[in-house]
Image: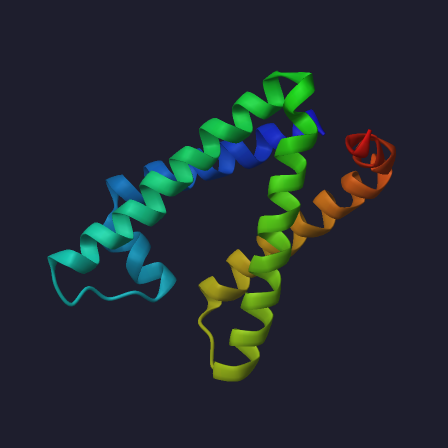
Length: 130
């Protein structure tokens, strides 16, 4: 669980840094185009600020054993929603760029890995009720 959380923290931190340093390149890679400065601010806010926050939260969860389950639950909840949304919207709109498949493959992998970890640690989840 700790490795999974640290890996997620590293990925979110890496992507956040990449997005702030090369925001035009990363936005183009993801299929975004900016119509005005508000679009740039929104992109940087979500793809840098929010992801940096995720990185910090997940690194803290990975470091402290008592928070690992919270980090895992967060990741599973997020990735399940991401995978469902990506699958439905990708099926609806179709004609996706290579980047969508690359990022999707990573999200699907992290989702499946998180679900496996969650089910392997289900006794910890059941103890939350107590």
